[in-house]
Length: 367
Image: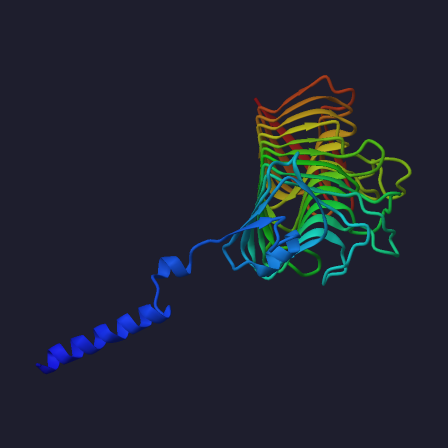
């Protein structure tokens, strides 16, 4: 036998041996996604399935109520049987995460997690001193959440526990450090005690499309908020977020009090095509940004408040409520350019400027 033929025969023998022992398999088979079903004999709880799953696996949740907290450190897909059929419910006693907050679902460790067709629900039963509910879903540690056709509701405590940084339906990132990202679409965010969706810190970002975000009529709430973060809020319906008594910190003075808004956005956020109804402020903008094609109805104070920056509003519609557009200067000279912005049926000023500390506020309108 020639040397070349001998080497080929040896190589073939090695491959056959590897195949026989299971040590050699096609790469597609090695990386094939598994499906883990909950509940089942192997996985009675959602957390047990998460713990057993490999990155990339799919966890299928059957109809039912799962009263547990779920922490996810790896990239997975979780799918329920529908937001009205599958619910992750806050347990009676919540366990705090690494940041001290109690959340029903927590993502971290740079995991990329897809969640759809299920509900995440409170209420909690803690107090500010003994474990109040911090968030419905929390995204930290550079993790990414892809949430669709879902519901997050009743993120509050019974009785109410108005703690700092508590009871936000979806919390992305953290201050002073901590980032996360999210794509949230076609979902219902309702009955929260703090904010509907809040995105915190430079490096965090969120794309929010076609969601329903509804606050409470009894306490002060905010709808969608970007604080230092970036992203897009488009096609959402946001309502019933306002300053409520007895909240000692909120009011109508832009320089000494806090106002609550349907959407709060800063530099690097696109706000377009949203419908905002019955909020104290429809849109509260800070920095350099553009709004367009939003419909703002019956705001308790102003349809839009634009503070400390350079703003362009294009084809927004403000109808009803106490005022149209407020332009506020407290830290820099501020300009607002209103292009084909329609303001009708407001009981107060269509546009008004507020100035402090030597800075000027200017508003121009274009047909």
